[in-house]
Image 1 (cartoon, helix red, strand yellow):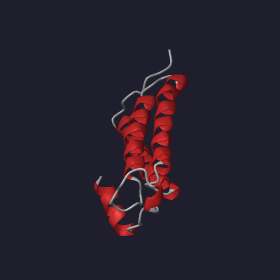
Image 2 (cartoon, rainbow, N blue to C red):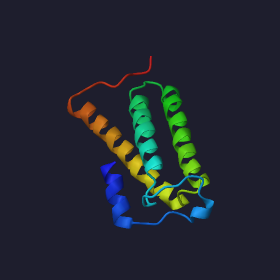
Image 3 (cartoon, helix red, strand yellow):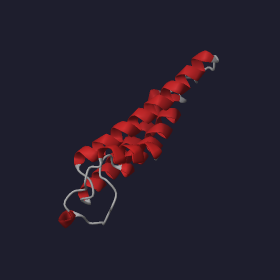
Image 4 (tube, one colour):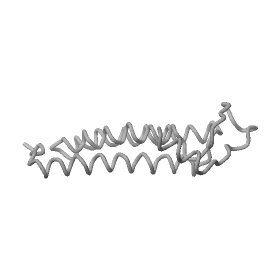
Length: 121
């Protein structure tokens, strides 16, 4: 959330025209906090759970719903008229970068401390 506030202050992009907004919002537009936090939460959890699975298909079971939820939340922000598509894309990029970072740290811990990932039966 702190990173989002710093980015909003740095870019200070105004929201879309209030005529089209379904909700009143008074903060800056870029990046979309909803898109960012949904990507951080859902993609991070899905990446870590998928990484801990032996089966690729089971890993997809976690990844696909997380991506769908993240996309739907982002699209809803544009639909409600409170963000431009680029605001949502920026939020997704920050969230995906966070999830990727968490996955990389988990991989590094496994290799560094010789933690054995699950194997297919």
